[in-house]
Length: 279
Image 1 (cartoon, one colour):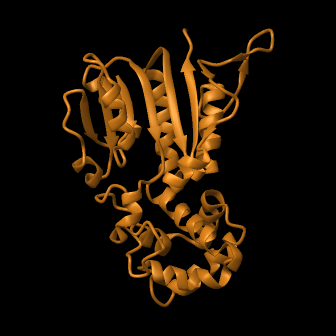
Image 2 (cartoon, rainbow, N blue to C red):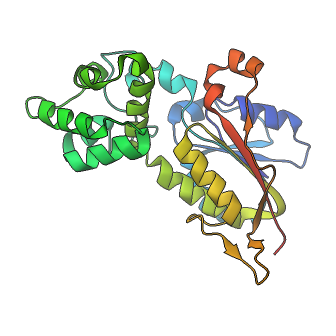
């Protein structure tokens, strides 16, 4: 059994094509649009849920162990292409939504309107790694005193004067990324998924994670090295690292030039692999 976050379905579809008659793939996604594009194949089951609940779902359905787990993190191209979802700054009229699960209560607009300056600065600094995090937070709090920010264009009007012109697009991407991560609790969901994945993998099973920004990658790397969310490395009497996982390769796999040309998003992708060791 293999678990994968569905997204656009390209990776999952390729996996299904390689499965034998006894293989089965479970694809998780909390986005109704992604679920609607699920393939019709007896070797595939689409699960409309956040992948943080993979362990609960599998155990509820009688699956006791998995041979492989693949997590493709971040957002799909269709999120950026659908301006009404608010994931991109390319459409100034797009609402500040950013929810992967459209029924979730928190939107980016609500987050910007209800968070105090300290919280906003923390979001921009931790999840966007923006050097002007405090100034951005202060400017947003000042602007919303007159009218709450509701669209991408309204947020751009506040942020633009504070951005480095030479890095404008990159810093806008970091700003929108930081809001998206918090709106969807992406880091919390990743922690839950990794913990559940370790319990669900059978000895010899592979854990494969594709990340797209440094915060995710650090968390995944530390988890694979230590076997725990805290990244705490335990050692035995002889000083050898004691972990239920063994990383395959000291460095992540990255896209080559041809892959980047075909898929520009892969430029920031890092793939890490770990195998679960016998108890």
